[in-house]
Image (cartoon, rainbow, N blue to C red):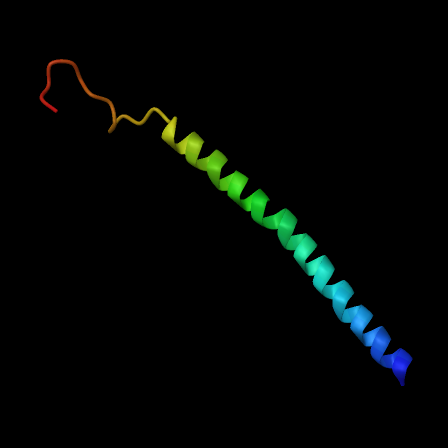
Length: 57
C-alpha cells in the first residue's frame, strides 16, 4: 500500500510541475505578444491622429 501512495504522490507532483512549467512559458509569451501588438498599434499612422497645419487643436 505504501508504494501505491508514493506513486500517486509522484504523479500529482509531476502533474503540478509540468502544469507550472507550461504556465511559465505561456504567460511571458502572452505578455510579449500584447506588448508587440500595442507597439505596432501605437506606431500606426492613423489619419485621425494627424494634425493639419494651421488648424486649431
